[in-house]
Image 1 (cartoon, chains in turn yellow, orange):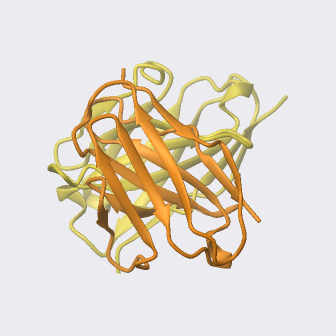
Image 2: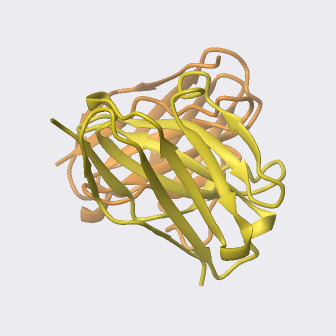
Image 3: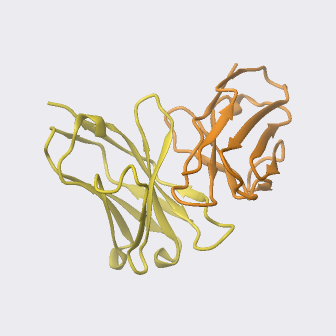
Amino acid sequence: EVQLVQSGAEVKKPGESLKISCKGSGYSFTNYWIGWVRQMPGKGLEWMGIIYPGDSDTRYSPYFRGQVTMSADKSISTAYLQWSSLKASDTAMYYCARQGAGSPTYYFDYWGQGTLVTVSS
Amino acid sequence: DIQLTQSPSFLSASVGDRVTITCRASQGISSDLAWYRQKPGKAPKLLIYAASTLQSGVPSRFSGSGSGTEFTLTISSLQPEDFATYYCQQLNSYPRCFGQGTKLEI
């Protein structure tokens, strides 16, 4: 069974750093992309970017490039999303999701349960 | 960047109704479109990809059509679990953005 399990909810202060995780199981982790999607409170889905754990190739949305960093450790089938200096506007639910490696499989077919990040002083 | 516009943003319907949601792309994206359903407090779920291909396990009351710039998601007979928010996503080019969502309410 394909599963993506994300790390737990975080409460941080502005300016702090954070790294959240997404562990894949039940499939070949290095043969699929992992994407990250932001959902701010009461708002829609925002595509942040994707990473290919096989070689750590990344594609960022221009809006999120420089704001977050995606990484992956294929030895433990885990992808990460990190911030070096959080802002209150980073408060959101963050989802990871699996994406296929070739057309027409660029959709997200499996999703993690989400990690709620709250940034407040 | 490609923009996606869904209509309507809100839709009221009843169990058993047939409903259609539209997604328009700012430029042609062939059939590179997916649809998702998100129930409150849950992660989105893939319904349709390649504009009209039903994801495995998704009920046949869901169907998708379209190509180029205009796409539709149709639910033939609404069930209680279908009252949720629906999103389209373009898969043609980066960034692979989502539409703003359509909230389907009872």
